[in-house]
Amino acid sequence: MPSKKTKKMTPQQQNYQTLQQKHELKRPVLKNCLKAFWVGGLICMIGQAVSYFYIYYFNFTEQNVGNPTVATMVFFSMLLTGFGVYDHIGQFAGAGSAVPVTGFGNSVISAAIEHRTEGFVLGVGGNMFKLAGSVILFGVFSAFVVALIKTLLVMWGVL
Image 1 (cartoon, rainbow, N blue to C red):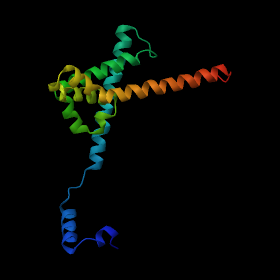
Image 2 (cartoon, rainbow, N blue to C red):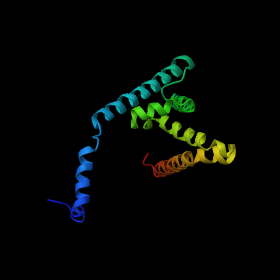
Image 3 (cartoon, rainbow, N blue to C red):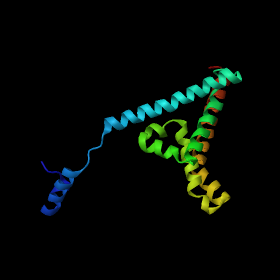
Image 4 (cartoon, one colour):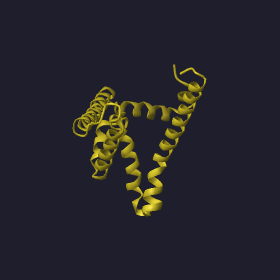
């Protein structure tokens, strides 16, 4: 049964639509999902290795190793983006490279690199924080709300 959109098409447009559907490339969804899974997992495994490095060599505990690990992974992604390597990883893995915290570092530094011709303050600084600013803003705001709720619950004797 033809849809409403197909009914409004002329016979020539309908012929073109069937021809286009016949030649349209099918996306390898399973293959893309597997690549994203493995590359994202590899990035997370590297992050875990960095955590163990900080625990073993710098005597961090499991409770306080998260911040330096995140900072190191963001630094690695920014470094790889600057050398043009992370773009190839992103093209290969898709969302597998964007989901971990390294995707955030890649997004921030990509905006800075793209606008470097406009100067350091207005180009690099201004455009770098277009993405990072919103993430920082909502992160700080949500932390404030959670802390406020916890404070109220402690005051009321619930916690």
